[in-house]
Image (tube, rainbow, N blue to C red; front, side):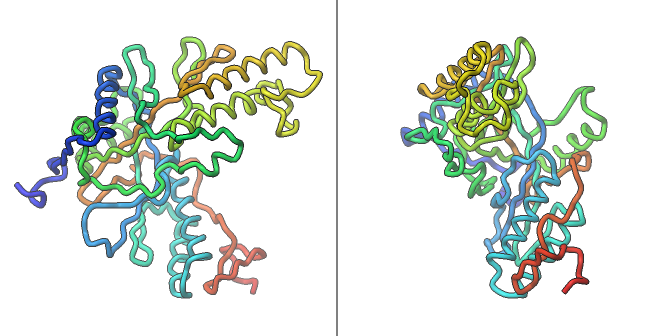
Length: 371
């Protein structure tokens, strides 16, 4: 049977035997993780946008243009709206190109659009399932030794702006070779679907239908986030996804020293930005100073080696390793399901832009009367 004869669920998975030392180390890490973390916890869907150029010469590859980290479909549509608007403003080479881009923006301002083609490029809002590996005690997997880390950790306040973005430049290629454990995970997750009485009937039906309509899966690169737990309660997310474990640690460092003290009333919200748990204001009460010291000491522990868990004031903070999978069908990655809901509706996000590239700040995008 050739690839062309195979059905989507029968598409072959190309396995690449690790040869280089780094590849072998990554496979060994994956094997250790598979032995230690024997179950999966599914968090739910995330959304982004992928694009496929008409002139790419066939194939099944798509490129991520809006990171697959958004909590609902409309957030991804809004991000695509902005992407196309700024492309019209800054990159369009002619009024014709600008008109095509702005026509797409106009649709995104008023419709729940999950796919459109602009200037030969097909854009699709895509749906990924986020999950994490857990051990027998319910502990969520932490970063692996071979997960990407900067050679020199940067803890400076502006480091986040210089960090890699999640899914930056990511190409989705279901035909790319995989290491043995990656291939095994991909095949094992093909039948993944929601189950149990905790899900509404439409969600269960859509999930079962997706296994049939998009029977293959593609595994995305690992991402990282903060999870936290108080007492014996469940783990809950404490941040969005980050490209590296260090980015998540730096986010936690900021949360412990700056955000948590303000949230808990230990530092006023209107205090100078330089005041934090490491640098408290002079003359604060001893009880507040002691609490700030506990936050600062927990944050300091993050900076020693690759620390992935600290505790402060009864809450355990952990750097967790998040995984995502995209379901894949004959026409590419899965779009939002009918049961996926959004927190808001389409709206005008930017000032009106003329076809000559002039931004009309005194005129809304839907008002053609003022000239």
